[in-house]
Figure 1: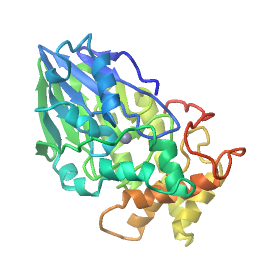
Figure 2 (figure 1 turned 45 degrees about the vertical axis):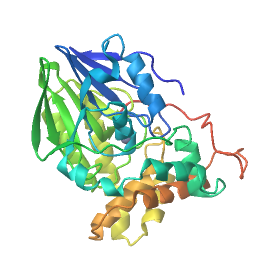
Figure 3 (figure 1 turned 180 degrees about the horizontal axis):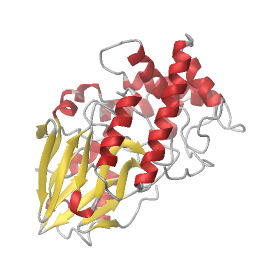
Amino acid sequence: MNLPDGLLSVGDGLHLWAPQYAGTWGFANCLLVVSGGQAALVDTPYDRVMTEALIAAARPVLPGGAGAVRTIVNTHVNGDHTFGNGCFPGAEIIATKASAEHLCREPSPQQMHFLTHGTPADQPLGWYAREHFGRYSYEGVEAVPPTVTFSGRYELRVGDVEAELIEVGPAHSAGDLVVHLPAQGVVVAGDVLFAGDHPVHWDGPIARVAAACETILGLEAEVVIPGHGGVMSREDVQCYVTYLLELEALIRARHAAGVPADEAAADILAGGFHEELGLPERVVILTAVEYRHLDGETGEADLVGLAARAADWAFRHREPGRRRRGRGGGGGGRRPGPSG
Ligand SMILES: [Zn+2]
């Protein structure tokens, strides 16, 4: 892994850890807020190795190291934004109440370890898990839940920096929040927004994600930090909303015509839908989630089950030249996607 050895300044007291890998899963952006001798971190990396790399990269602005971070904000509860929580012992961890209530459906570090080591490597899910999650070390990771929860809005002060946490879920997940830093003109969007790859949204429907984006646009920030990928402008966010609405229309037309979900997704992808973006198989998940809503299904989303359906598509569309029983691994040759 080629992780950043420094943080990017995105505003007074705001330091972004941006691994910026496109074409794969798990490299989430984290924002460190440092002011007046206090520090807070918005989202934590996927494993201990990455979290330690973040702490090392932060040393110039965080001389006290991990111990100086007294507050963590989790934009949502997916592991790639929360599994590093345990590296900041004693820190208060803030998330929405809805996030805390849906923790149980998140794959645990132990389940992720099993998926990447215990499943058959020549079957779609096992192959896909190794390809995209095999680089992380889930052993010894303890999922640390939030200690402070809220619904609606929550004011947070870090030294002289004022932040407002705004609940926008359910959208990407059951309990998404975005962080607005009004004086700096910055919004941290979590996984409501992706840059460079097709997004994944577990909860939906797509209209809820688009509405969350409209909330972000309404904050009139100049700098918008997506959950994954490069920093976005307001225009990028607008393009993303257009993407969502295009996809929603394509899915709804196929649903109305009685096409089964996975067939609908395969058809949309065969039509070349946003070919410039990485991880096309995520459209299988987006379609399945949209169908659930259209069919009026309630109950908890099955994240691993949804990922397995995407893995089936990806397995059938592996790059030619790869051996059928080949070892998953490098992910070489994937193009870096453009922003927005
Ligand atoms: Zn994520």
